[in-house]
Length: 444
Ligand code: GLU
Image (spheres, rainbow, N blue to C red):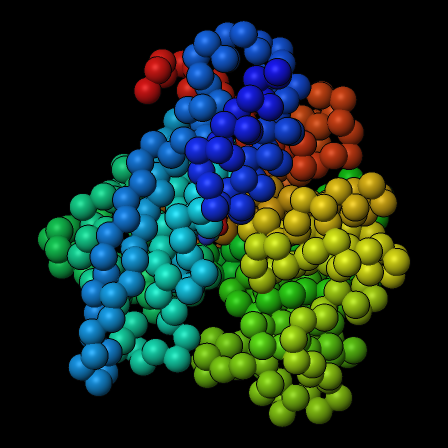
């Protein structure tokens, strides 16, 4: 049996009940098959893929906290430190009821290759909790964050592991987490990114994932002879990634017409009002049902349905596996030219295959949404220099990084005979650097 197939089978057997982790393992290992086959015997002997697919360290801990009525609750906290071959572990914290070790292993594994693609020296990690910040008061969120950091602080550090935000962890949560880290360690270190601007945060970090997604999409389309200008864009999600993807889509001359949250979705034929969206989501922390008050001509629907709206470009920015095979069929039937993933692994393997088989230009998450973590690495650099760059400086670097990623994934795909297959291109380009570092560092 080929070494890649052996390891896929082993990982599935050793990690039961972790379907999302199996999904990313299949996708990545299938893609890097041509690289592994160049040196299969040596890699097997060195257990390279077994080491790549086993996190270097995983911590799981109890997070007790008290609600505003004096009731005590207990959540699970986690940090998966997956791979530090090319730099300290780096990756977000997700607070969402769906969080479990399998989800975090999938996210941490993806993060290794994403971080490598940025060209910056950061390894892969991910963490979080099954805590749900929705409906909690600020004081409850603060107490939860303080309790979470009271354990996490001993596992992280500016040269060890630098967490950031993800779903359910934004500026508010990072502020509370950072305050507690500082109190516990009596030091002012670059140990979290996505910080507020008054305490070491970087300009453009808030916007970075969404803006980066659009810089990536524009460059990928250009490479395929298509201009982003005047294109109709379907966006899903209404969180940090979606909001700034919508904002940048306008700035680059496209027209975003949809967004969604966990209860429903909006179609605004005149284009999504990004200021209304920011007011609802960032200020009021409300639901999209409010959107119609700002835009009476828009439509609100319960459930999910964004992908039935005819578009040129699809940007899923909500969560994993939100685009299934039926959605992919609908997008193809409506003439969608390209899909770039703003969320982490929003397309199922079946949907991805269908889109690619039907010549939809496909920009995979680990390349398309790498702008967030890339700007986190720029935040770390500014912290270490004890300097703050201007918005333009950071934004220009972000744009350059995203354009480099497009160039690299395109040439990696071509080099391995897979022209236009950017999934393979991203996995191969991300893997090659990690491979080189792992080989050089011996059996660790
Ligand atoms: N959670 C984001 C991601 O999925 C950002 C991570 C970071 O900035 O460290 O890449």
